[in-house]
Length: 193
Ligand code: HEC
Image 1 (cartoon, helix red, strand yellow):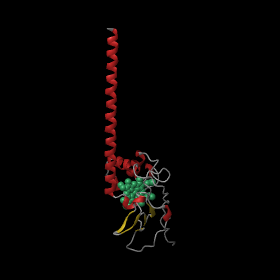
Image 2 (cartoon, protein in one colour):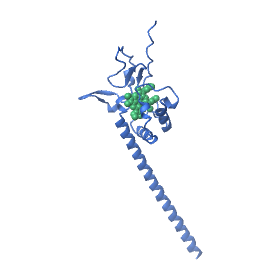
Image 3 (cartoon, helix red, strand yellow):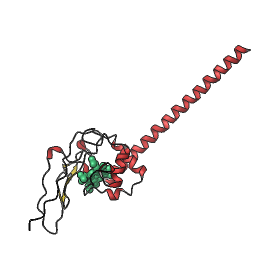
Image 4 (spheres, helix red, strand yellow):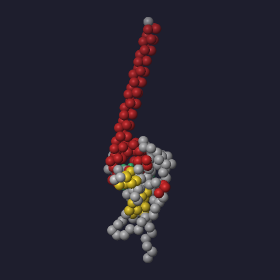
């Protein structure tokens, strides 16, 4: 009888372990499906908001400038240098380069940053929180210098935390591209009196 009870309780324990494992596997599968849905939403947002309009270098295609997908979201190309602002006269206030990654205006010249997960030159080391704080505050990592125009961070403030998390999750999945974007150029000094 004793043997029977021991055997029965061992079988019971085994069954409990099996059920728990099946539960684990099911929650792993749910988590993977949730992650996939999050990345898909992020891709949808990035592609419909058009982050690539400014963050992907453009090249000339049959119908005019188009995104160079081999440099997807890698920012102003380091090999294009930091061209100084052109001289503009009223009513013109701004200009941008043909590859659509450098923008001149009253703020000086801004160069779009590398949004790929490259560790040294992109967002590789950024946490989800770093990303959300940057977009919400308009300052690098939520505390550095202010982001210059035309980065539309005030408009992106309308995105929910879940949407920003989805954008971040998608940006982690795109190919990492090593491209060290130059620092912005200050506005020209006002003419001497
Ligand atoms: C109209 C052009 C434009 C669009 C569209 C745009 N950006 Fe930007 N973004 C910029 C510019 C220019 C900078 C660099 C500003 C600076 O150096 O101060 C920048 C900077 C950033 C930075 C700061 C990165 C760093 O290293 O400090 C992040 C993050 C960013 N953009 C994310 C995005 C995302 C995500 C989208 C789409 C949802 C997007 N941007 C769409 C122009 C744009």
